[in-house]
Amino acid sequence: MAIVDLVMPKMGESITEATILKWHKKAGDKVNMDETVLEIATDKVDSEVPSTGAGTITEILFKENDIIAVGTVIARIDSAGGSASVTAPVVAEAPKAIPQQAVTPNNHQPAATNNGSVNKFYSPLVLNIAAQEGVGMAELESISGTGNEGRVTKKDILNHVANRSNAPTPAPQTVTTAPVVEAPKSTTAITGNVEIIEMDRMRKLIAEHMVRSKATSPHVTSFTEADVTNLVRWREKAKKEFEKKYGEKITFTPIFIEALVKCIRKFPMINSSLDGDKIIVKKDINIGMAAALPSGNLIVPVIKNSDTKNLIGLTKEVNYLANAARSGKLKADDTQGGTFTLTNVGTFGSLMGTPIINQPQVAILAVGSIKKRPMVLETPEGDVIAVRHMMYLSLSYDHRIVDGSLGASFLTAVANELEAFDPNREI
Image 1 (tube, rainbow, N blue to C red):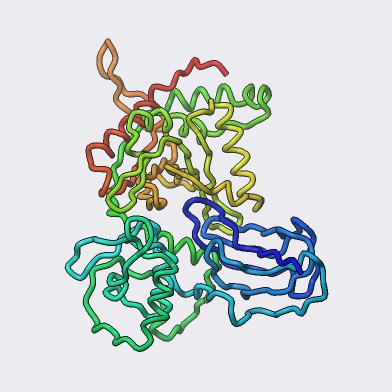
Image 2 (cartoon, rainbow, N blue to C red):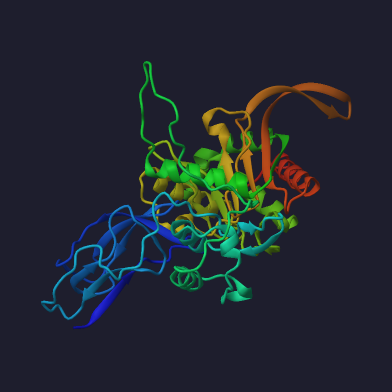
């Protein structure tokens, strides 16, 4: 019989694993090419996995809720359609699933030695295998890696685990490393008039991602305000004609993104990430925009190559992604590849916020609600007080790469760009 391996698909540069949500097929079922076999979820989005062959499913190697590394064989299909015996999950020789309670550290998170000096870097898969097999950090650092620049690969740690059964276990050592993120456990009896709500899967992933970001990046937040009166008046005047001409409603978001792109070009270090001791400056400007889901959770779809789109193109992309998020129709690729994130906390009435960096990016901008305030304006005839539309902006940035000077300069540039919006701009 001809066997086709169905593997966990790669869904983006930063995605190393996914959770099996639901199997649509079982061992022994017939399946057609491109027919949905299972549903999976990452910390970004849920997706369906189609069959890569037509025939009979002979083996399903993992159960629902297992967390599987990208590239792992998860099922096998007899493409000849023969009557081969089928195997229910999980077969003895199947690779181990990463236990759900094991948390994936950030791809760029360094492991530190017991004297506090960073010397090696480990992938999330390697760290999860180490946690599952009881390999301490001191023991992990003793493994000679065969990967690029001597990094420990999956094969290296599995070989180490297989060969250490008779080896003495290293004495426990105090190490300095990022904290392992685990679900908080209840330590006290719950009494009184309360309602207990179990966190859903996405909320757990968001919580893990946020805690990991704070553990990875030293956060600094700078604030400024912008007089966006010209911008507000232009949009109010142009929105009906804009929609009639282009079939799209224009919100403030594409205007903010347009300003961001212009400023990122001036300050390219804002559009970077950190890999060990190497700063990776991204040439593509892919702006993520935080969007609310019907469940109340947030997701960050990405506008790819934002610097190549005019205001009309940005408006179409923003509206498409926002609608897809609200209707649960985002694709895995829609949330991949972001290099900078914008979050509009003003949508919910907040004046300002201190956003958490969306790893592995190094900065995130929050814009607050626009409020009318009396402001002092300088005129040739002297200072006057006028009612203006004002908005606070806050930028959280990774202080390992972005210092206060760069962060404040970039934030000021964004505010100046918004204040300089041409109120006579053509639609």
